[in-house]
Length: 246
Image (cartoon, rainbow, N blue to C red; front, top):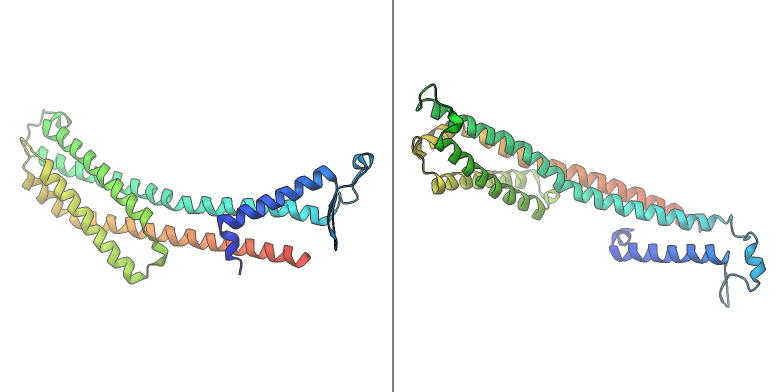
């Protein structure tokens, strides 16, 4: 019934009209509506200096309450919508840090078997090159995941379509990492096949974390949408009360 109130046009109209009425009441002290038209203020300037008979009019307060509540409502809606991507990306960054740490740890394991004990592994050229490649992969994945989150309406997905979607994204992300290593890796000590073997041994762990990432993204979308709908319902109830007073 009140869907029109959630449009930017309706919001703007309500705020402009309400503010205009509030300004007129404040400047003139009164608004009189009669059959022959609308009368604003009085003709005697001295009377304007006196306390307006409408100063305590409940309708004047209703207008101010309406302006405040409407502005508050739309601010809450916009804040909640903006929070979806922010919360999704915050969780992605946690997963990203965890998985990059795991990839570094596995690479160091390979280096340990190939370098003398007295050598500092992090100073190895292969290690430094691997870290640079991971940074490239990280940048590409972050952009890809952000686009996934921002361009998909997760609240419309069923449990079945969510699972299919997550499976596809998991495959794509694994492929992106694999292709990047194939393209950029040129190790002097560690072979590409050795990296592939070590990562494959831990592949299920990687896949599970990617699935967790998208499952959390869906959950954030749905929980936030519930909060949005609750706010809309509360605002509609408020408008109903205001209309009943008229």
